[in-house]
Length: 257
Image 1: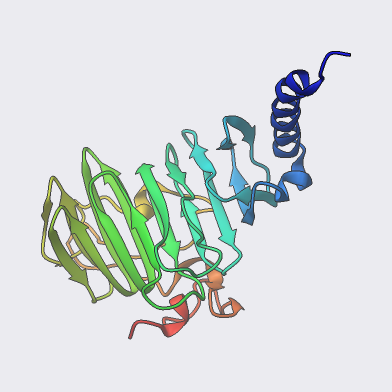
Image 2: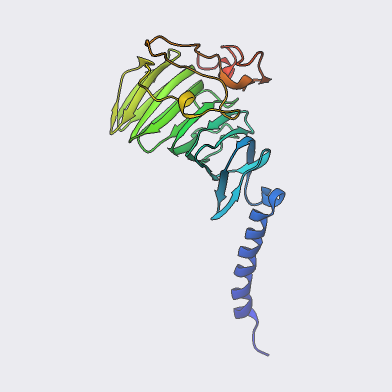
């Protein structure tokens, strides 16, 4: 009788691939092999996720997964909350990849923003754990709420709370004062400066329930507007904070001070 081994060697890989696809598209079963890392708390208009080549439209409370690519369309936005209590708001026409374990607090934890604008509130991972990468700069966070806008090959990073370091190439600069910003790109990094009306901010790029509070804004006269306490009423150290925007000590759990 002919051996079945060659036939099985052909069939089994096909079965395994089909089983993986079923698990990816069947909602709750994605926990294996894809790792659930949080959920899309708010979804406005059209927001999609893509993992292993399979794309889906996100709905409120949809689970999100490690290594997933999240995209927002024009006039769309989303708020993602992760297992480690990190909070990420994504503005219109933006794209991020959830590269690493922002849900485990491991060193090198990161997301990669490739276009658009985001606001990130770090969670309860160790101080210095969090990192946001862009095509032109890398931002290291220390107990931080930070806004990042990509525009014409430049990254504009505004500090809302905590402290951050912005690097492009081998040049770096630090943000330690609330509502200061750094412009980075092309291997160059500006010194930290006070926010001015000409600088693109997350608050001007993103409006709506998913975007949260005003953050730091500058008026036409060049004076700072209500420089938000950590926006959106979310305290990563312990859930909802008081009032519409929380207290200044709440974002990042007061770490990095």
